Image (cartoon, rainbow, N blue to C red; front, side, top):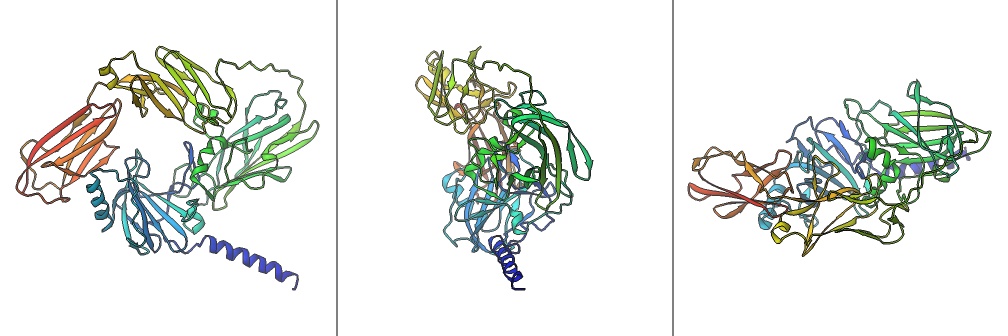
Length: 564
C-alpha cells in the first residue's frame, strides 16, 4: 500500500490540476438548445485555424444568446466583416467568452452600442472597451440574439473561450461544452513525400498518393510502399458529429513507426499570432490546386506552431535498405473516437536516376533578404522572410496583366505591388484601381493607395494583378416606399445598395439632415433603418442616402415620406 499511495496521490493531483485549469461545470451553454456544431475548434480554414466552435441555430436568426457565466462585458464590436456583431465577457475565473455573428444585442447593451454608433455616425464601431464592471453580466442573462453578421455566412453562433491574460484561444470542449459524437473521423487521401534529395518512393522522387482501403471498423490499410532516404506522410481527414452533415476538423493526429510515437499534434489551444503557420502544416501547393487539405505528419522548417508534442526527428522517417517498417497514422476527435491507417514500408534502394528540371528565372528570392524587382511600369518588393524558403520567382507582364508566380506558395508577410501610372490623365487616375484577377470572372479590389503617379497595394496573395477602371456609380434600388408616401405603419426603412466593380466603401443616411443608423446586411446588400431609433417631429420628413465606392464614384437618393 505504501508503494501505491504516492501513485494515487499523483493521479489525484493531476486530475485536480486539470479540473482547476479547465473547469467543466463553470460555463453553461450559450443557447437553450442542444449543442450541434457546424464547425469545431482548430478546424483548418483558409490561412488560419478556427478559433472557436460554431453552434447551429436551426438555420434561424433571433435565438436567445445567454451569458455562459457571471462577469462583465470587456469588449464589443460591430463590423461588416469578420465577427460582425460580437461581445466579449471577462469572468472571475480568468477566462473570457466570445459570442460572434450576432443579429442584435440584448436590452441595455443594444442602447449602449447605438449611442456610440450615433456619436461616431458610423455603423462600424471599432473596438469598444467598457470599463471593468461597467456592464455587469449574470450567468444565463440574455445578452444578444443569434444572427449571421460578418460576411457571407449562414446563421450560427461562433463561441470562443480565451485566457483573459494571454488572449490564447482554448477549445471550448475542454470546459464541458461538448456535442453528441459517436462517429469516428474519416480518412480520405494518403500522401507520401520524399524529403531528402536522395529519397525515393516506389522508384520515384516526387510526392504521390498511396492507395488505401478499409479493412475493418474505422481501420484502413495502405498499399505496400517501397522507399529509401528520408520520407514523410500526410493525410486528408475530416470528422462528422451526430445530428450533423458538416465535415469538421479532427482534434489530434498521431503517427507511430514500428509502434513508437514520432509525431503528435492536438488542437487544445493556440494563439492568433501563430495561426498563419497552418499553411506549413498542410500541403499548401496541393490545396491551392485541388482544394483538399492534406495534413502533414512531419514538421517543416519555419513552422512555429505550438500544437506539437513529442516529435522525433520532426516526424520525418529515415528508411534503411532491407528493413521493414510499419507506419500507423491515428486521427482522433475530441470525444476519443478514432480511425487509423497502417502503412507497410520496405526499405529498398532505387536504381532509377532522375535529372531534376533546372528551375531558374531572373528573379531569385533569398528568404533572409529584402527582395525587390522591377519590370516595365511595375515594381514588387518582398520584406525579409516573406517566404519560408529560397526559390526562383516567376514575374512577367502580359497584356497589362502582372503575373507574380502562381498562388501556390504560403507567405509569412505582405509584399508590396506598385504601378507607375504617370501615363494616365488625372481624371483617369481617379477611377483607376488595382485588382487581383486570379479569378478572371470576379476581379477583386485591392486596397489601392494613390500617391501622385504611383499606385500601390500590399497583399499576401501571389498570382495575377492588373489596373482596372471603375466609371460606374454604385446602385441604389428596391427602396420600399415612393416619394411623398405615408409610412405610418412602417417599422423600418429598407433599401438595397451594390457596386459590382471596386465595391462599396461607405454609405451615409440622414433624415431631415440628421444622421441615422442603417444596419448593413452585406449578404442581401440591404440597409435597414429602425424607425423607433429617433422620435420624429412633425409628419413630413426627408430621407437621404449617399453611397460611395472605393474609387470615389458617388450615388445619392432622396425621398420625402409622411408619418404620424
